[in-house]
Image 1 (spheres, rainbow, N blue to C red):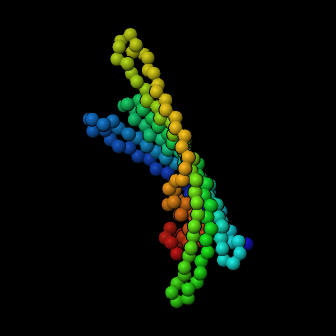
Image 2 (image 1 turned 60 degrees about the vertical axis):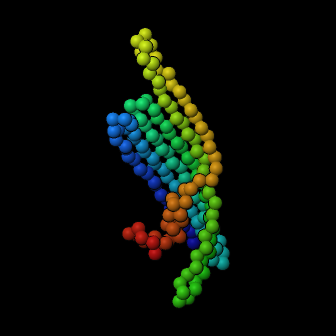
Length: 156
């Protein structure tokens, strides 16, 4: 039974400059997705992908910040058929589930001189669950696992 395994580490950071009206926004996201698949017989393959991402948004001029932590699990299966001179027909199907934990906070500064040091925090914590569109990451990892990506990053 020939198995494949792989990892993908998506990440990004950036900022939007202030324009005199809107404040500067800084963002970053990082994650790790691990996966493995194996032949299960008669040309069929089954695989699993697990991943975690952690993202943050900060607006320091507004004393505001948010974070999103996401955990993803995906399963997939597929088979390919050789069509001779016509090429190859590949069929792949899967399902993914992602759980998000969103934490958003903003501090308020009260303008009264006697209360100048009072900075109440308004917390908001959201928990969401549902199907997620992590398909680009999972799909890319599936191609790596199946040996369909060359060393230069192009698909075979």
